[in-house]
Length: 65
Image 1 (spheres, rainbow, N blue to C red):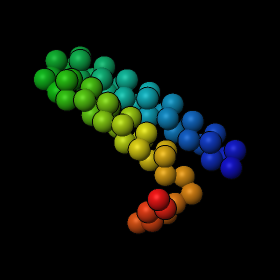
Image 2 (tube, one colour; image 1 turned 45 degrees about the vertical axis):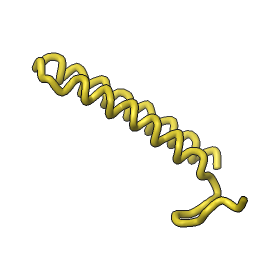
Image 3 (cartoon, one colour; image 1 turned 90 degrees about the vertical axis):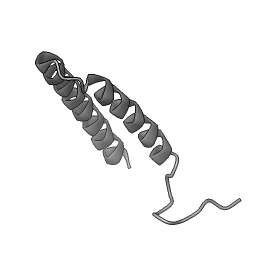
């Protein structure tokens, strides 16, 4: 299980570096998509937070209440 956490951390660092590179590219080109890009990063982190709470359940399985 520790390998999965290490891989997740490496993936997160890579995604963050790609986001910074894309942000710099958009800023350099002076495109109007910078605000949209920032919002997409925000919603990505919201989605990651939602998915991290689903440990141990497969797709379509509901939490027992």
